Image (cartoon, rainbow, N blue to C red):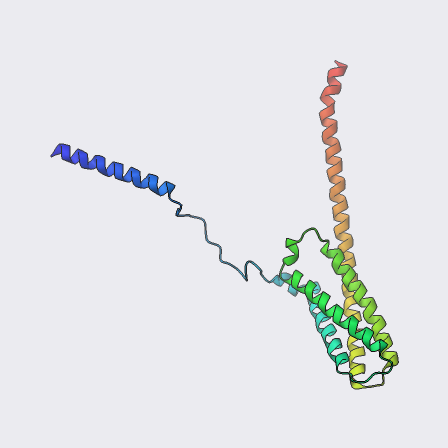
Length: 211
């Protein structure tokens, strides 16, 4: 009976050892790491901090004003001359598309996946060019209009868009200058630290030559 019991104990030990080995080699391993929920569509999330910031609010206002300007100018059926109307139409449509794309990039955090682009400078160029062209197009439309409701509304929305883009241009210029100064400061600190490390490496050789 004792021999049978020892055989059973040995069999159970071998079975437990085999189960441990098979469990270790199995590809279906239990993990203690927490499973992170999939936030958003394939990792795309809405950056609420940006949308609530002054930059995000200005971007939304610009998109709305550009869209309203484009809708108003599209409702005009007759024009003479039409060059000013066509120019205003081109400016409002281009500003709506470009600013809308930038709003999506910043609002969804997609710009972080493309770090090779200077997004601060891109935003500065977009807002500055849009402000200038909206101002020119609005002045031309206001001077050549036939006092129709659609033309007056388009000109008003155009001047409001000029104001919104101008404020954003000022803020983007300050942000770009601040980021540029930070990069220059980091570069200078790196060069200074590198020169100091070189000097520290050369000092033992100088001491040996003196000895």
